Image 1 (cartoon, helix red, strand yellow):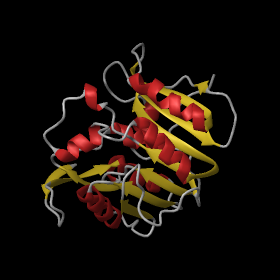
Image 2 (cartoon, rainbow, N blue to C red):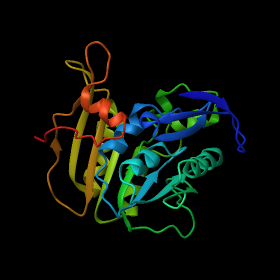
Image 3 (cartoon, rainbow, N blue to C red):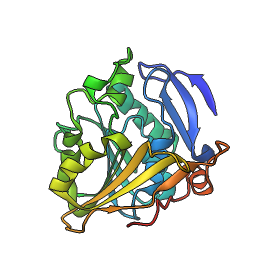
Length: 257
């Protein structure tokens, strides 16, 4: 479902839906458009009732809203640097009746908001910009550039911010491009243990284009690589577990090796 609309934020938006209509979602016409990646991260993130969750770089709130649809008894804080996107996240929280559970704050990855609590979160979820500045053609849209290109904040800063936000034995769940795996693992292995790499294969027999990486603060468990999950059948339709996740079910990412 998608229809053009304007709301009281200074950006043109469409009104869309996620999870088969369970989540109503305003997002910018010219900016980051939520697709499969944030939904799959929310479906696979190890959230439990009562957890405090940080959505680092929350945008309009796709990960948070999908996570709350699956695990309603969460307290979710978002951090977003673009005021327009932060306002959309706040509007989306109200639209979906979770304004008491999801609080998007204006701030930056490397400079969290004043009085922001560090070291208290059970889970950090994040979908950082995928492209390095020197390898990217910058989009004309400022919102789109901020969502897709790292800019002045390298991936290591996202890992460090997650580490500082988490309590002892808290968990990090991040989705990124498979060709940036080394950039994720370098800083993670300095700060985290229990690292799990879950490849996402577009089709059977194809190379992974995305990975979901889980890690845990304050543990020493060795790194593991799971069998991952195939997203599409050969005819282009979603595989059953992915189709179920896109409708709101939990997603199991594969056996670990």
